Image 1 (cartoon, rainbow over the protein chains, first blue to last red):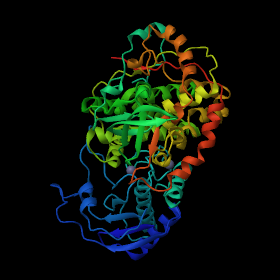
Image 2: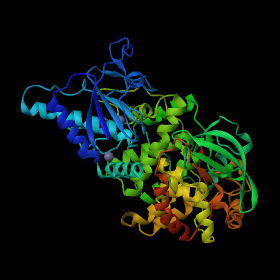
Image 3: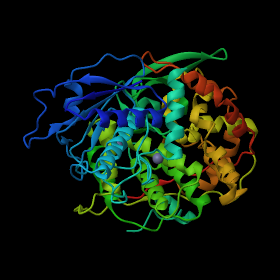
Image 4: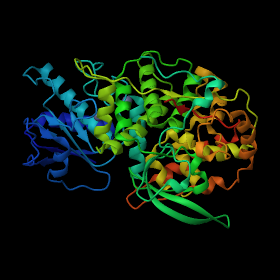
Length: 181
Length: 362
Ligand SMILES: [Zn+2]
Ligand SMILES: [Zn+2]
């Protein structure tokens, strides 16, 4: 089961699209598990949210074995800088474990036209699939058409696909099957 | 920048030092040491233990895999031959990132050479060798999609690198992977101020002709080096009770040997050959130098190796025993079991002589 928890208000139709898309991507029941508040002390000095700390401190939701919880925030997320600097942060997942967070801050403007809203939803769904993919042990993928391709890659088209490539899909299915038995 | 150099000539072998941090003897391991077991992932040493295998008491080093807590036991006398090494230091890791961030566009195009060399790099190339596999296959993937086996090899190398970076830098694996890809595929407008990358891993040449070894041997060797496991899905190993079965998971099942075969389209029969090479065990005579061969002794070693391999006890397969850790996920046994077939298949292939491993050039 994938449980979606919002830390900002999202349009119910957007969430319905997201729920449906995650279900299709992983073949796992997906439901909304309510709203939570952003923990008080996870803000960094530049006003972003510390992604690692946020996942540690956000109020939990009730889960069962192998449930995955996806938190969605509106504020930009921050990661600790690495050897070559800080990578852009579209989300952070506890690899192979239970929780992930993604932000809507980097998405294209949602706008008001049918096309822009559709593009926004698809990109949100793509990032959600990416984060949940990490929770199911998926690594990044070199295929720019795959949702596991790094979200900041220059190879990514403006409106990237929101599907997993066959390699990543097979791997996730294998992992999910294993978890079920 | 050019990619990793080709396997070099015999004369150069003497200059090859052991990869940094390689564990040459079980006595170097102390509880709480963190090590990279190429076929299994990053492990923490738990301590010594004694087990009875086929009526014989044997000394083991017990380790716990960091990512899932699975217990892994390795016979002490096998420690020098499994490519066990210490987790890279901060300084080594920095070099790895400057390597990953550099540009090179001449990936090895001969899949047979590439796949074999990459298998060697994963086992004996240290952390830089793992990074070379990731970067090399990544740059190749920009020219064309990788064949199935190499796609798996890429994923496994990435898995190993992600976890070593995570442990070495003290960050969660999810962030370690972002660091890696930030270096490999920087966002638009980002330019790194890179230092010269460390010298690439040099791989010694391999014997041109290989004598067949008893079939069982090959299986055992496979098991030992767990090369197949570099195709590993570490997660699935923990349910297995016996070493071989263990490695079986993505291990031997989808090991190099297997993969080579599938690649007929690209390499045909040669694939099988490469497979054989990768799985033979290093020679017992020079435990300290394990996977990579001290150049000079190489010819001599070669001779010794074959007999050594042949002498390997059949029971070696069961040597590595794994117990399921409490927090391990359920259902792994099923997967491990499912892979036993391929393991067997791998064992049936004609074996080749022991391989020479590459070392890092200083
Ligand atoms: Zn990611
Ligand atoms: Zn993919």
